[in-house]
Length: 272
Image 1 (cartoon, helix red, strand yellow):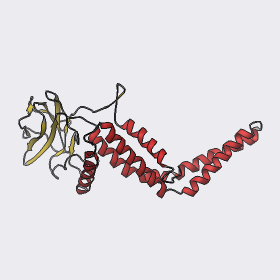
Image 2 (cartoon, one colour):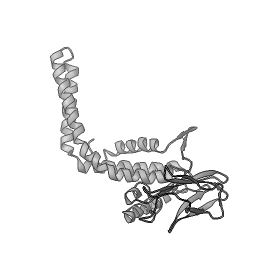
Image 3 (cartoon, helix red, strand yellow):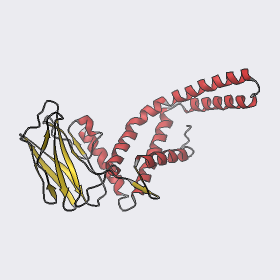
Image 4 (cartoon, one colour):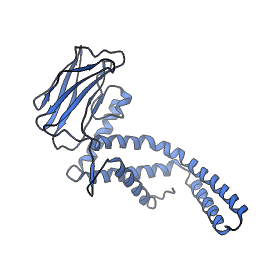
């Protein structure tokens, strides 16, 4: 699972590197185009296009009947009932394609959030580093943190045994990519911290579970069998600017993906 997640991440690294020179909107538009196209192709090959066309034709006929016989209540009621049943059949025909889209679209969402969900720390900015322990492991006094030049650890460890967590406050002193080092008993691990105006992956969370690695693929998984479940850096959230507004990336992605998908349905010969 870790190798699969790492391979997917490298593919998206190469994809987004093509747009590193440009405004973030260009990269988001590109991944939205890919998302819309992939979803459309999957819909075509996992759905019964003939059945969808037939059901849509029935719905159109039902609506025309309602309009043409608007002075006949009994006809309208029967047409509305048929329209309701045909609409239910249309939705049922889309369930399998939608289920098939969950994994690829979910992977694209995770990878896009890895690059658009957070921004790097600015010089002088502070953040919280939180180490969460696995169930049953005690966040004792043995855990230590060490930081390279460029990162200042401003507080001693704040231990929260009930939550299984230990926190520190750090301050970014110079731009760069750094590694915080931790030692918890015999276990040791690191967490990357990014400072400065840098584009690319910003991994707020490093996890240990292989399943969780699909949701948080920014860094390799923590050593298996250790006492630590995750390490988190409280990066600020990122946003996109649009006419003076600040938008979370997921809303433009959703609108653009739908727009590209709708526009491609003709060239790709997909019945929606």
